[in-house]
Length: 425
Image 1 (cartoon, rainbow, N blue to C red):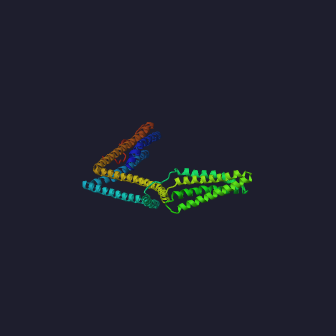
Image 2 (cartoon, rainbow, N blue to C red; image 1 turned 90 degrees about the horizontal axis):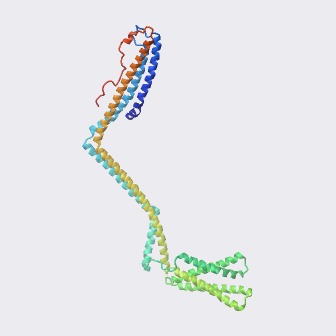
Image 3 (cartoon, rainbow, N blue to C red; image 1 turned 30 degrees about the vertical axis):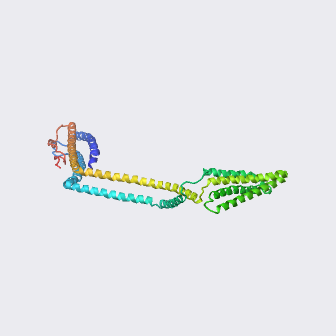
């Protein structure tokens, strides 16, 4: 039995068990004494120990043996395992040995720190060299180099745009298309096609005019960048003028069929033509002020800032991963340093600790030995009390009230194991 179990469990229950067993034994010895006394047993001339007293002795002797097995196991645990280990370490341990152990602990700590540093650097490299991050970084560096070249070439860093925000310009183009729709829808009704086909034809024209205005304003704004753009603008303007003229002519024919006077038709024709051209010019001017004077600069500008935003998000993800790794690295480093400090402190106080352990073990040994001695004496006392209880009851119920010869001898003690004083440890 281990020492801790002996102190915590065995001692607390042994005394109560012994008391309970002794109470039962006293009751049995009294019953047996009454029974044998009425029969005048043992005989007066008997000079040997009766089987009844042998049985009582054997029962209490069994308690002594059980106590010895448990107590001796606990004492052996202290002397053979714990104390011997402490004594051996005390014999081997000196200041030089402690210095050697301190050096070994420090070497182990440095090895752990170096290994931790290598693993940390490897993890950081893995984070920074991940294919996803490196691909994004190369893509951003490429566009940044292109952006730097473009800014030097054009000597500016911002777009030359007056119509802001861009979504307002898009809404204006939609407004022009919506304004064109009812006019053009009436024109194509004159073809007397199905309503769906009429809507499709009117819708194509509605889409065409804002698109041509968008293209015209852009090429007009960027005409300095490409020499062909002025000719493109003239071609677009003539195209819109032609479309507007024939559209106005078709509407005039439609009104003529409805019976409108000839003098009014001429005015309506040029009114519709002028409205179409004005809407086109409004869209063109809006497009002119909504675009940069350089297609190259605007394209690189938007691509650079888009890539920059994506790369900033990518950098934040990498930075967060590095921060988590750094936090883990710091925690592990502190843990290693704490363990090292605890080991150093323990080694420096090792001699004093071992001496304290030896004193504590010796104290526990003496406590267990003294407890076992006391229990042996108590069991021996219980044994004699049970014998005397049997004899007194027996004598009371005898007819002759005479004591057998065997009772005249002194009652021998039980065979004990802890009778000798505790040996010095």
